Length: 569
Image (cartoon, rainbow, N blue to C red; front, side, top):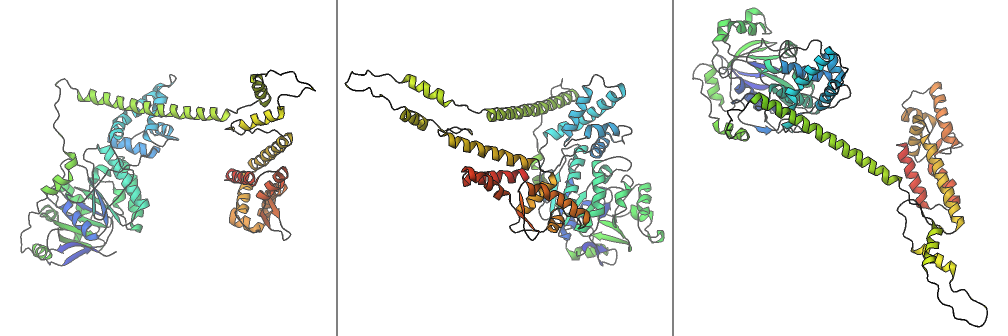
């Protein structure tokens, strides 16, 4: 990738560029120009970028595409542990074995919550176990209500340029979940994307857990291969976990006022002490002035904002002009936060927010549980109904039907005539007419008059059941070999099945193993062996051999063949 223009060196006015990489920008908010620096670098990089607004009333990144908060829920024990640590602002100690227990086999936090509730419902639960599960249940009660009522996007769609994801209304824990989801999706599914983590002391804290930390470490170690870069925005360095910082190669250090933080910042510079700026120099940096630190050394730079022309920026770096106040962004801010404007709410003097939130949380959890319980009951009812329908096999007694019809036929008066008596009705004609007018069966029952046809149909059904049972009793390897041979139009050698179907190495042991697989397939006539020692498909030919002799139709043979293929799959 091409280098990214940062600004101009002080006081020479020489243009300064940086190599695209993971970087960190530090400095006091509103006094250093961190956000202006990040906006300029993102714009001039030509890459897509996703940034997060995490503080109410934040003024940074006023222009850009609005992106809906993106969240993919997980429930592995490491994820749940880091989430709880972020909620408590402290490391978990001995609770992890209980967390592992309730996270087994789950795919969502709701399932984890249900497992905890099931444990608590056990009257034999011991004192320590009950205490830990009760604590975990209360922890999740702090998180679950907001996850339940927040609308998240299931797809991460990023437009060219800056994509602003507004998280101001979410709690810190839920903000961490969103940032983690974005990091993982960008890392594994995208390229040429910059992810900016704001307030790094909060999302990458030193000595505490957070859902973002593990994802950020993977991202910063692996992301650069696909031109995915992590850019860290923080007021200071002291509170940031040092593991991800070890892989950051570009440091852009701005104004600091507290002496200990100044010293800590200077100690992070990857250059010899004699080349570092003095403490007083860092404490006197004006707005927009930074020290750029890379493996090549340190330079004092004026960062050129996006909206400032080159000539003016050069003059400022040389000290020939004053630093401008910046452009008015009030209109863009209003536009960006249009969906966050709310009407004032009248508060009841007797209203207790803690009790109301607790009650609302309980009601939401009960509604969710009731919904999923009813959904499961509905699904079970559908299965029972389907089983009932499949179990209904209409049994029709033809003799009984014919006798009932004959009983309803009125007997006509017969006038005496000369000569022998003649039958009034032709019984065979009546029976044939009744059979012809009977409605077709919705099941597998057919009405046959000729006994010979009935015998043939019985034999066809018996043959079908035998072939189906023979297929079902094949081993997984036998089914796989049969599938492979059925997919070939010409005969194939045993070595091809060994290497291209099972991906085994050729040898005496695999040849013997393959021979044992072919034996039942050949004995059941599902495959044929040619004179040249090759194997070719024979499943359909086997069906035709046994069913054609009983007048089975081509459609019946084809249906059975297709059904057997599905059994193999």
